[in-house]
Length: 476
Image 1 (cartoon, rainbow, N blue to C red):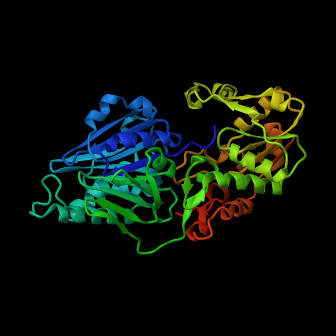
Image 2: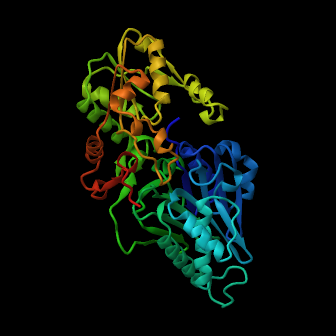
Image 3: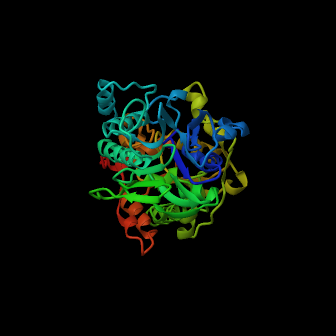
């Protein structure tokens, strides 16, 4: 009922069965998107693609991997941000030509999508989807052809594969300079893998070693899932090129301030991931500790809302000295709430997804920690669940500041007038959700918590974060 996850990408080069490894990596990124999944793989001659609507385990069966043979692959799990929820918008996207193919997977959202779409259409490009990812792919193709790249009947000059690869990399560099917004890209041809992170580093992308090659992916937990070795985060604006010659990094001409999406640490990323030098779980612990410092209250037990509120709840308990309890159990086998046909039924799905543990709560003053309040519907239902289980008092604490503005950079958020914090004051929200007290962490406290998690030897994680959903100020 609140923020929807973004998307997850993976690219693998130099594995015996890159598609199979991509499957395991995508499964570990399933929290980033549950609407569709896809993998494109190459054996060095052709690119084969399989994608579908549903979870990774629903889309892929054993027989699919026999067709997806090869040592290079890119994969994607999707939650729709730009474009509708249809198979046409599922990723990766593949463009096939007489002399070759390109596959691309994208996490993020372009802010100049319409402008680029119109420009490409005017130039003769056709589109099969409403996704901004296809715009990026067609833009790269356009630049490649302009560079004399050998695709189809274009580029009749007889030059080597090495020269063709160089022209393709140049095309990616040129296209990336034209797109604006948030993006983490995994791009594949029959002979190489390219990773790109947007100039502000809004969307995460990291690099690891796997088998005799490399892996690019949205979160470090996906590297762990394929028994790989985490190497580093891809730098904001960096383009990583991997081919038979090894790995090469292309750095941006200018380095703007890093502005990683702050909600990666609050909600989106898995707690076992490390993003830009900061452990997600440790960040959540520290947010809970700061929240306890800023808004203490007498209580008997601290509980967290599964799953992303658990780390903050443990941090709050640790700092306050109030015992931590489970309190709420989550039904992990229930479908997403948007499948219910009416708003009322969607709201009532909270009762199915979450249930209280009466023995942890009955007769007690309860502090409940959640990662955010968006519309307020889920929070109201949570308070009802806790009171029904016998909680004497319910004190609601939130490990992120009030969400007052929608996101335009890759997160599916409600419109501004649907965000309860943009239309209600604190006391009004407290009454609306039915809590005895309500407090949010301050934006300054949240930044303090993140900075305290930065290893002393890592300077870049002390830079900025995108805070647009709290402040209304966006990097692009």
